[in-house]
Length: 526
Image 1 (cartoon, one colour):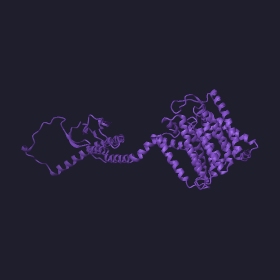
Image 2 (image 1 turned 180 degrees about the vertical axis):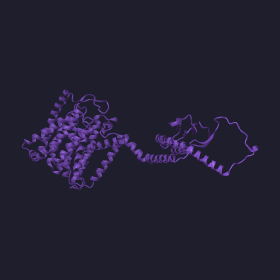
Image 3 (image 1 turned 45 degrees about the vertical axis):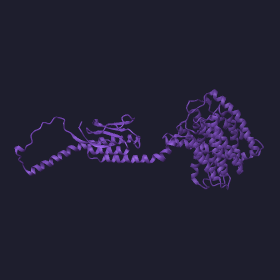
Image 4 (image 1 turned 135 degrees about the vertical axis):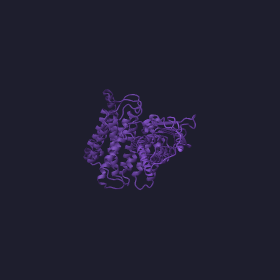
């Protein structure tokens, strides 16, 4: 226990001293994060190299413990082979974060560096061996280990968007791991996580609101990576079937942030690595929380997750599953309170809009087929009319091959309404008018007119090309009948008198329809 107090205290003092040096040096070198009045809400330029102080304090504290006569020094010496194997992985993660802080790496390069660091950790002997009660999972351990370490690193990177949040969550997760290690009698794990707790507490002195220095990616990535590594060691000594469940609960908030961010961007059809202002802490700030109050609320949520994770570490506790379930339910209510637009829209769509949308798309499919099999111009209009009726549009009128169909008189000209016009070749057109709320899906007017634009012009051209052929065939049949019957003489008295027919007076009857009350009107070819 004295060794734990020593290494924690030393790392705390070193972090206080080194953080001040890193802050002042970064200000002189211009290594600062500047506000953008959008995602970055701080008022002044703030250094972003706090990770240098955290990692330095952590390593120096462990190094000093080696030269003490304390029992912890012997434990650290016994663990040096594993330490030297994991040091390249930690260094790769730190350099990846530092390069991003200095040069703003592309997302895929940054992810590649994290995967390399996690792969080095696996090669060094850090592996997930216990998963859902199975202790021999074979090659599956490779993607599980690398995925877990990368996930933890990015989780802390995502929540590092508000003063003191990632640092405080790291302290709580580290304390949870420390208590679990002591309960298991795993003093090597306790000595591995204790200096990280001290370094984070010392850094929090300068990082809590208003922050004078940020962790930066070099700090958040390494913090998440080290806590993820400690979680793997924790799970290896776990006596429960759930294996990684306890470390997962200890890191519930940052892991929940990752899941929400990925799912939100998926629903928005945006790249996963796109930065936005929809993180949990941003939503709390938008709801009127001050940065300090938001951080304290999230600290409380992490404390609940920590308590549940410690329950997971205690064997033969029948209420553990109930606690996990209650925590999950509370998390769902918390996400609901944050009021994400993406999730609210998805819920409404799944509960009420999915069936209506599916029905409307079925009607669009039936309309397209009816239009495709039409063999006359009037049948084309009938397909248009029936499709508009099925979607609930108030009025539809069209000009097809020079003939006008439909009615253009509005039922309630005083009321507000919308119209959509589709211009077709040869001065043909289609007009849709909506006067009330009878349409099932107003937005489906676009795919409705798109079907018309794609199918109708081609159909009208086919009908126009087929018309002369039919007329010629009818003429051939008539001539054949006359030739077979022979000449017919008609008395002069029975011949019809010639009539004067004015030009452009030929008329035809076409279907004219109002979606509310169809009718047959005479229309003149235009």
